[in-house]
Length: 256
Image (cartoon, rainbow, N blue to C red; front, side, top):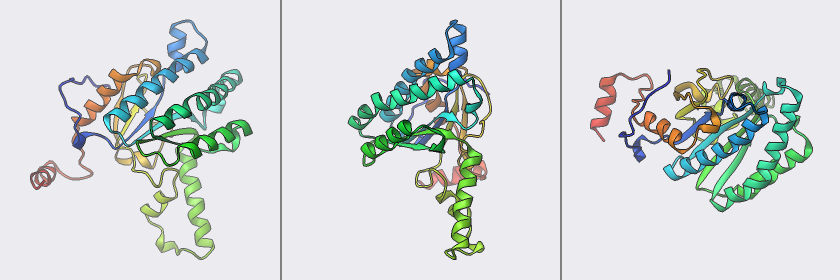
């Protein structure tokens, strides 16, 4: 359900999400409404990425994950896929130094084997350049799918069992999570999807189990600082229960 949020709700440290994950949707529809080619929407979306990264860094978000290209997006028209790959490479070449100057660590998750060698090389170089930065972690999910992530994690666990490093009884939720693409980072507290769609489309299926969901009607190219702040304010107004009752939450809060 799309929300109308009062700007009066403060986004304090205690009510701020540590990790925000975003499905950046609506680039094609944004372009179509303007009678432009689809790639024009993707190019306009780059400006929204910059605005959202800057806003999250300024608001103290620790991790921002952006769903840039899903494993299902290869089904799109070939000319659009080719344009997206060129745009991705261009953005890496142009923006990684800016991220580095601002102390942002870049991580890229997903199956890279489908990308060409030049793009894979730039991904590796970008990660190496920013590896030790601590201001914020920006995660780009490219050729990523939640099913793929869970499958690759369970394969790694199975290999460890086969090698005699683990017993089947050693397999726990925490162990599987450690082998997921973002095993070393906090799971998302807030998942945002733009353009009015209300589904998660195979994005971070394991990680979003307890995330707060926020659906914005804005197309991604229009989702900039004001829209990002609306989402943060909506999160600040939520009560996260994790299976507990209101009374338990109130009792816990009174002890702080």
